Length: 383
Image 1: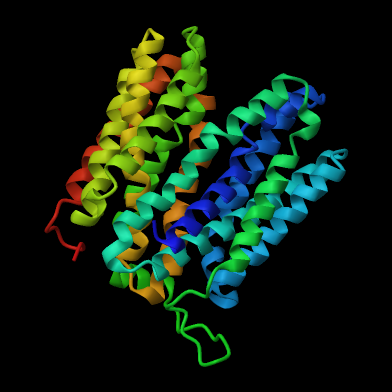
Image 2: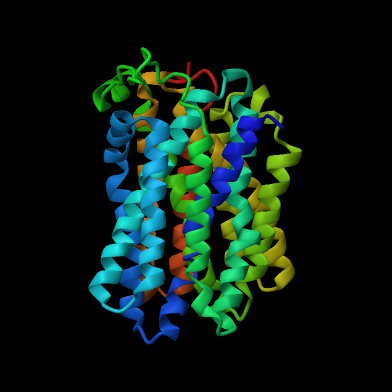
């Protein structure tokens, strides 16, 4: 494996570990006496902050430089993890730190995706994005089960060490990266002339990118819905989550070379459609075997869908527009993670959990079909 791709894979693992370590923040807070409403706020403000700063993240990345943005934002992530490790008393303090964590994480992700889009050459881009995205899956098998164990076993005093270690790893690896190749300099590291959001919408199919990324992200965000649906049936969500990770890992390794043989846009719609159809099957699953089967195929769809949507930043945008394309892609996907919990709250109350989830899956299927048609080869805006 190329040394650069391996480095970026490990950085992906580190920064996703930082985020995924907080998947069990709500039970961690409950064990420390926080109410469900307070825990919900502390979980939600992180995602609200990541969504809100995405457009600004491109501006910061362009002004500071791609590599420097990763270094400084990961440094802020370390400071926030240290702050929570040292003091978790006042609720307002906790909220403030979580907001700053979200801002720093968001900037790091925009910079990291921009870096990938700039430094990976066209001939290796498909394979590179697939292999690098494997790093985002590894925390599902390592960090997430470990945080679950720490919280359930009464060892939650060690909980905050995990995000601190992940942030430190992100920082140390960002320091070792070479400056992005397209970030032309004249001996003093000056950035090139970046484009505007107006340029992005004029020169690329940005509207299609927003539509595709938002509804793919909505389907991907179903992970926050699935636990409630399955537990109401008396099933164990972990069967679905582990098989999901297995399917995604399988397709990103065994099928990695397909990404270099065809346009990445070709995979965006069908992979999304596979995920949506698996959610429909999951709505009627009654056994653990059903969860494993639907989870594995869902993971295969996600395994191609996620890197395919990230690759849109490089495939459809010129180098000077890639920071803003990265911000647009992440903003579109993050927005869905913010909206779905709102739908869950109102939908489950008005329709019941099963009907609300079934309606959600039908929306995913309809938009996946539209996305597939939209990205068909030869259609305008895909040259």
